[in-house]
Image (cartoon, rainbow, N blue to C red; front, side, top):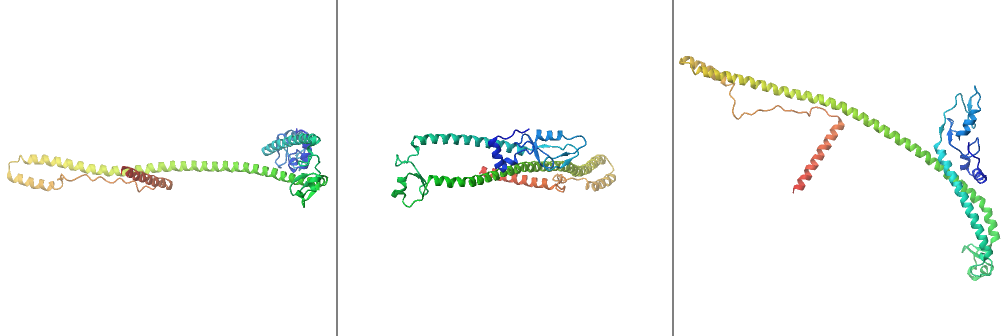
Length: 335
């Protein structure tokens, strides 16, 4: 359970909206390990556990502030923002105590120095300062007030200045307390913005990772499709080559058979039979003669008809453009 505030801390908490917001409504002390109920009210972890421990069997659990009821013991989450704010507030109060202590020491030191003559005028050493010149913002003795140097200046007795300023102090302190409370709320708001931003960053990363995973899956499927389509185009090209190869093989066989026929005809003795066979062979030669200048014209292998996914088409164009730029740079370097 949270410890009760000391006199100084309790006074600061009562006079500051910040201190009130950081006070547990059960133990009336600063939050210790604060947790948050589903209704958004916060308590010290030990305090709310002790409150729920008093609930008898069959009764509902209730929030000590709004009295919202729960049939089962509600789930409680650690309030990290309050943990940080309590730490910051505790440090601020300790710093304030140290500052107050230093001010007390300085006041004591000033009192000792005053007893030693520090109240004396810096110009008229034997005179005690009694007035404050608002124009020069300088402490004056009676001789300084009546001197030509401060003629026409507004100078008030220290007692009157002290009375006026002490009347102003509560308003000044109240204004500063309000400012401090607003700044504390802003700190809380910035902390909440930080937590929200972290959540948004995490969500954005998860969405991007999911999209990239889907893109990888899409490209993998496209890869399999492209491999199948390219194999189909390749098989068609191979079939064309095989057809041309078969035609050439058939002509080769015919050429061999014709050579054999010519060799047999050359051995025929009868002139009529020889001429008749040669006429037949000459007609067959028209389909067999191959000019030495003839070359094989290979069929065209073209994959351009296979559609590519847009992302791959874009990458391919960029790669081609980069290769072209690199070639241009190499040509320039060669000069």
